[in-house]
Image 1 (cartoon, rainbow, N blue to C red):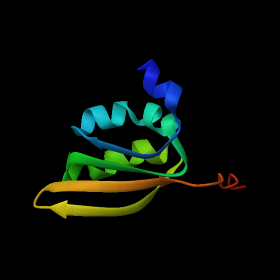
Image 2: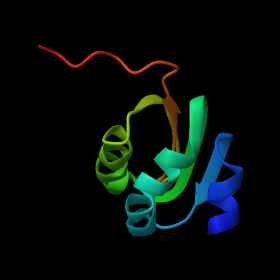
Image 3: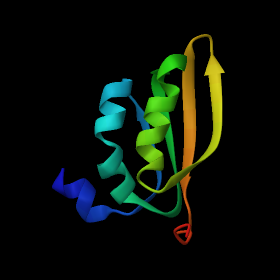
Image 4: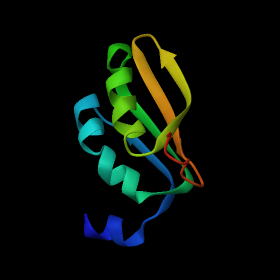
Length: 88
């Protein structure tokens, strides 16, 4: 959505949808998240956690915490203020 992109970046983004759309939206959410901002992702099952997290790691986000209720997981990830230098 053009309005969402125009008003970015955001300090906090929350998405409570299925794992597939969370993975698909990772690049757009990553672009819309401000440095130091957090994204909270829910609506995924325990066995989907790694796949979803990997999509957001690829966007430069880092793991902050996870919570679980029964088989459902919520992930919180953060965009670093400054990118880390690439390993040599």
